[in-house]
Length: 196
Image (cartoon, rainbow, N blue to C red; front, side):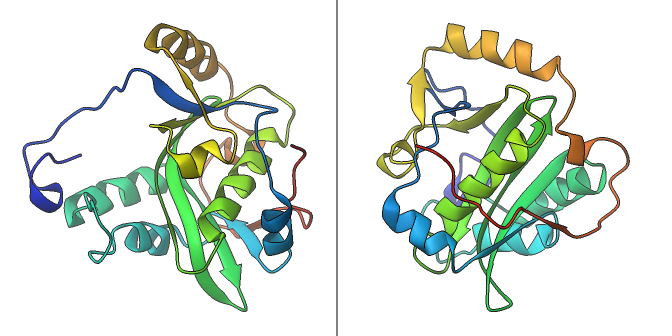
């Protein structure tokens, strides 16, 4: 991401130590989030550019997603590397996240919400996708924040993180993302709640 104001150059590479990750079995879905999930429809890869635009909203603090970054990620999406999880309510996009899938590693880049719990719902939907075929996975969120820690994100030292990444990227992609990207609509299963 750009180190300048609003994501301007020069570009920087971030490798925090410790690193924030969510691992299989760690997702925590509170009772209030479970109630919120009932009001949402979760979809995958149906509105990628809209999710990036929501994350790049210039009214958000700490903006770093420039038009050049959005274009680059859109191209990565077209090539099948970048994916989005969208949260819909009454036909309107109210939240989502996007990132890169490499093997069983999903590197989350950004998320947004327009209504309460929508970004958390996107994380729940992503965990469902990563868990669909029963293989281990690593969800990299870079930094653990109180918001993400409430969902089960933990911090791991860089050495452990690098071992996790090496193992994860050597595996196949989740089944729904294997093969040629076809821009078809994918709806996440109806019961998006997950055990604590």
